[in-house]
Length: 65
Image 1 (cartoon, rainbow, N blue to C red):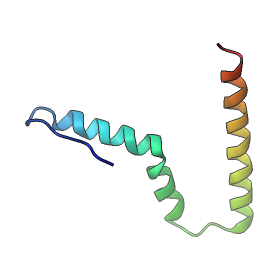
Image 2 (image 1 turned 90 degrees about the horizontal axis):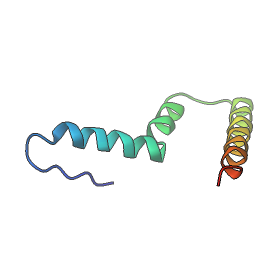
Image 3 (image 1 turned 90 degrees about the vertical axis):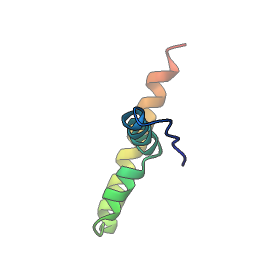
Image 4 (image 1 turned 45 degrees about the vertical axis):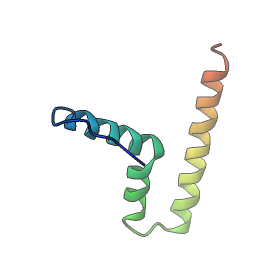
């Protein structure tokens, strides 16, 4: 992942771009999830919830052309 900085004034913009990229790729969420051990039952529950959320999002965007 690359974020280019042009001059001193754009440092804040570079930080903002970096945060957006990490958020989009899910790195922050993944790091927080890996911070502590996750029980197998919690893992199954989390994956099921993520699947439901993906399906809801797909249905929501499906109708709006």
